[in-house]
Image (cartoon, rainbow, N blue to C red; front, side, top):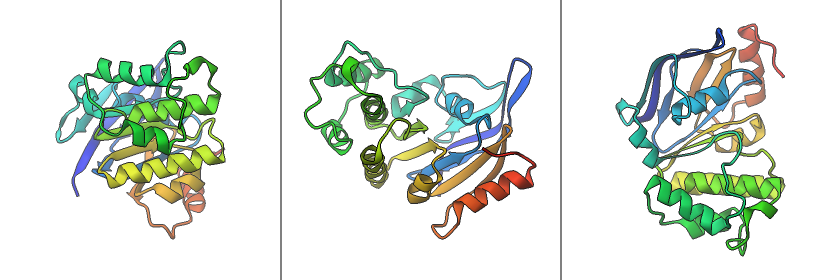
Length: 234
């Protein structure tokens, strides 16, 4: 199986502190790759680097067998930390602006919005949205433009039970259509339902990377991996 994205000896420092140290990821094409780790493990920093928001101190990110470049953002969607929304614009206007900025077309906008439960909200301005609705729109925008790779940082934040279920449905639907999805999440119960491959970070190091088998007790694996590395978990 080919890897759509890999990192080699990826490392970064922040204010003289080692945040990531020699990270070697292997993200298979067309699969859901889930990254776990306690607070401060370096998950968000890693996602910012592979989505082009930050630059590493050293190491290489490879996308589709070539060194990552800015032009790759046309086929990479992302939601890192909080959704970047324009409050005075409607849902539809936010989508049109995102597609225009990235110079991409969208073919499955209605399907994505319906799966995430937007229904008749297309013409509503974002400023009146709840935290959960803002998160749903941020997720929707990450998938707009038919990207090859979608990167999501804690996508369940702010979502209620129905929202989490709709997110799961969207992830499985997009995977069936050939998308590769990278997720960083604390919700082990949700990772167990969608993951094809998992990675565990701790203290900026990659402690484990392997294909996920459904019969695996993910909580036990997570805790034992951190304990073997001498890392206190949340």
